[in-house]
Image (cartoon, rainbow, N blue to C red; front, side, top):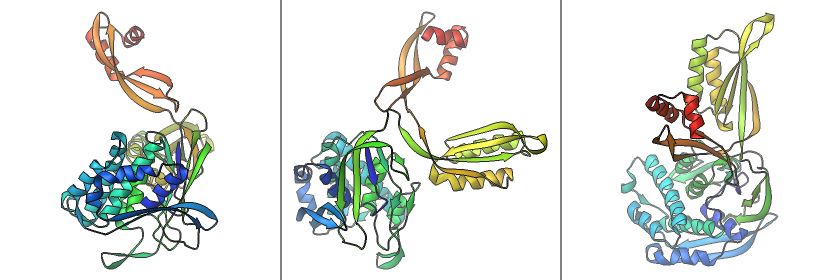
Length: 386
């Protein structure tokens, strides 16, 4: 697994590449990725060196270039033609599309009409990052990230003063946990695009893992704090994938069945991971219910407001830092024979981090369909399916 610590100094494309090189990525992969598209990139120079950032000895990656405006379609074609494997190319294209979609939304123009700034740098960052991820065997593995430090303060946006994070950065990181510490732009749109295309989980605490390697990627500026992105690779602790969640609880004794049913549907629709209503006995021996919600930590405040608005409860208990093991879910199709007839059935499969199948169950709607067509009972159909 890979853990991205973007809480200290955020993440940019060059910092991420530098950290991958520090992890042991082959510098020759930089040349291999960029050589096929050197005509599009124009004149450029790559510099890889060891530097100090505060107390850390880190790797620095620089891509110096002559800026030029390139259209969206030409830039995408360049990413597609970089010297990458198929799976690395998919990552690079996905990162580029994420950035283009954010820029399109911020500027109110179609992607195809974009004329992007700093394009040689952007293209090279996505191509080189994908090449090094492939070289290190990270593509396809579990990736966890800390909340993202975007920095705070002001920056110049199209000649005008605006607050951080940059609009495209904020758009890309929508729905992910962010915060602003230090008066500097720490996370760039390019870095954010790479992050959201890799990280499937975010956690405030260090994820349980056995560390194998650590990479320190230096930011361009030597600031009054360690301007370093840290990457950790290793094995997840145990075979069960883990993620951080928050738990919300409240006790109610005046909510009707209709209210509870509506609340359940609304919470699930707003992103709750699980909602449970538990009967209980409250003060003065009155029957009531415990409403328990499991959610992503970044959704806790918003879902708490919904609970209070819909039930009138005076308080909601929040456990902000819990972890849960969750098996990966897959859907596979199988051909089965029931009562002499062949059917295609979808099965829900639960798999641990090692790829071991823990459980497998047929989709209920398929079982019901077979029962209807064969005249057999549901349990008999399940038994004959094995």
